[in-house]
Picture 1: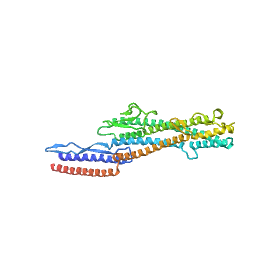
Picture 2 (picture 1 turned 60 degrees about the vertical axis):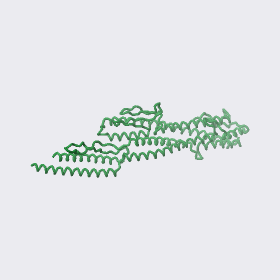
Picture 3 (picture 1 turned 135 degrees about the vertical axis):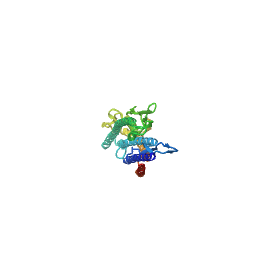
Picture 4 (picture 1 turned 180 degrees about the vertical axis):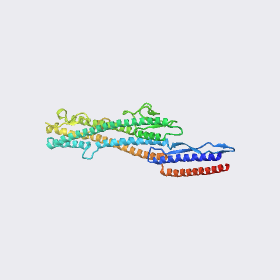
Length: 430
């Protein structure tokens, strides 16, 4: 009787085990399209054997836990790739907008306006009192000043938009940091050694991925399943701890010196745009100074203002000028085109300096695009690796379901046969 009862208990346990395994597989299939879901597996462990002299006899098995299939090393690398792709994607997007401000189609742009300015003065030097030539000089001068001002305004607008986006990004990061701390606390409260809080862990993993798109994050998990979240910044230690357990230690701010993620990309874009504005100011300031030094001050000054934001063209600088006076001035103005100028950190002609600025913007944008492409490919590769480990394969789950079904049917038959044997034993006793 004891042996048959033991057999029934083993079969009953097997039936319960396969029910859990089937339910786990069903849950996996239901989440097959969920990229933040980690495939789960019901872990079956043999029960302790009992000594029935002279042998040790097995007592079946039980499902001890339902665990997630994860590779934390791959996941950390994936979050790093997400951060880098996001950084360079944001930077490339912002610099493409800036690049359009300095693009020259041959008909528009600062280069075209600058060349028209030189050409108009060259024509004026040949006919200083010609109405058409004077009109061309006025129009070219005004157009150049307006084009420079317009470019500066567009750069300034871009800087303002980037600053606003940085503030939005900081707010998003704050919400995610709060969410991760709350999920840590919930996991600590609900999880036990044999009952991991898998759904909460999935939610936390998704929040960490979302945060890594904004700033680079590093995580370390303790024995209780709680993660500590840090990021690299420009502080003395180089590490900013964001979350410990269920507690938020720090938030990033708009002035944080973090170089990765979309936040780092926006910060780099803002630095670049401010640099371009400084160079455009240098260009405009030198143009104002050099042109006015040649043509004269006061009523005959060609430009007013001091930089790209304030540059304006006079509409009266040719008034009262005689041919004898204006001809050499116009010739000198046309000759300014080939004169090396001592700009900040660089000596070049106006056209060379402007071309160098345009080249710098194009190079910065191209480098950002190249890095984005590289990191996108790396992220895709790591995402595939992560999914090969943690993702759900419908084919594998269906094979497991068939296996569990056969185990369930076999256990049911054991119950049936053991029951028949028990009936026989009972009838014999009667």
